[in-house]
Length: 128
Length: 349
Image (cartoon, rainbow over all chains, first blue to last red):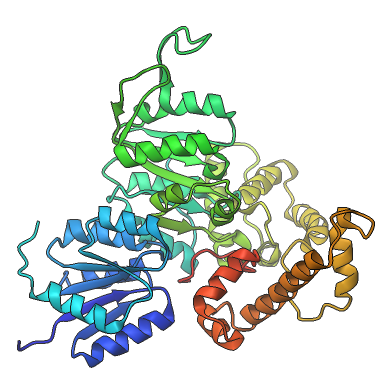
C-alpha cells in the first residue's frame, strides 16, 4: 500500500471532528474535514470525488448526513460511506435506506471505527 | 411569479449556494424562519433551479384549513366518499405529480395527517378518501415552518419520524434585522418592481440618512413588512413621514427583542412564587418539591444562557466551562427551552 487513503469526515460537533481528525491522521490516513453537509459536498466536488471513504454525522445544519449519503451514492457510487450518529433510531433508519455502507452509533471506540474503515477500504469497489 | 432571492448577506449567499446544490436531488426540504422572511421565495427558487421547472408548483397552507378539509385537499376524494362529495376531487398530491408540493406551516398539521404524510413520503403512494386504490405520486415535498418543530416533538405535537424524514435538507432564513445589509437591495428591487407595475405615484429611492434609519429598524414583519411599507409609501409619498411612523411603532416593540441574559436574579423566591400562579400557597398543588424543581430549572436556564451568551453560542466551549458533556448541554438547551438570541437554526453560520 503505497499512497495513503484519503478520507472525508463531516461532523458539526467540533470536538468529534477534531478527535476523529487527529486519530485518523495518526493512522496515516490523509484526512479532510468539513463541519456541515454543504461544505463536505463542496470539498468532494472540488476534488472530483477523489476520496476513498466518507465518514458523516447524520443530524447537521443545511444538508443532513442522510442528504450527503443520498447525493454521494448517486454522484460517486463507489465511495463507501460510514454514518455516525447519536440521534437514535429514525436518522439511523434513514441512513440505511439511503444506502450507507455502515451505520455506527455514538459513542464508539475509535479502534472500532479504524477496523471498519480498513474493512471497507479492502473491499473491492465493485458494488452498485 | 418568478421572484429572485434578493440579498447580499452571507446567509443569503449561503442559501443560494445550497439551492444550487440540492435543487436537483429531489430530497425533502424544510425551510424555516420567522413570518415574512421569504420561505416561499426560497421554495420557488428551489423549484425553478430543478429539472421539475415547468411542472406544477402546488402550494398548500396547512394552517389555513381545518383537519378534515386539509386531508381532502391533500389526498382528494372519490365520489360519495362522504356526504356532499358529489363528484370526485383530485388531491394536491395528485396535482403536484412530477412537480413540487409546497407545504406551508407544516407545524400546524394534525398528528393523524402527519401519519398519512409520512406514509406518502415513505411509499410514494396515497389513497384518496373513499378509495381503496393507492395512487403513485412522484412529488417533491418542500415544507416550511415558522415554529420550532423540535419543541413540537418534545410536546408530542409533531412526529419525530416525520421530522427526520422531512429534514433531509434544512434551509434557515434569518430575520431581516439580523441581515440589515440586505435591506438596500431589497428596497431597490421592490421599488423598481412597483414602479414598473404602477404608472402613477412613482416611488423615490430613500436618501442615505433615511436608509440608515431603515437599516437600524428591527423589522418584526421582515420582508413582508418592507413590502407593506413601500406600498404605504406609494400613498404617503414622503419618506420622512414613513420613517417617523416606524420609530413610533418601533419603540414599544423593542422590549420584545431578546435581552442579553444576565446572571442576576435578585428575588428569585418572589418570582418563583409568583410563577406558581394557580399554585399559590393556599392551593392543593403547592409543594416544596415542585418549587425546588422549578427553581433549579430556572437557575440552570439562566446560568446556561449566560455561558452560551459569553461563548457566542459555541456549545463545545460552553459545555467545557459548565463541566457537562456536549450531549447533556444539547439536551438541557432543548429541555429548558433556551433559545438562541438570533433564533438561529443554522449552526454553521
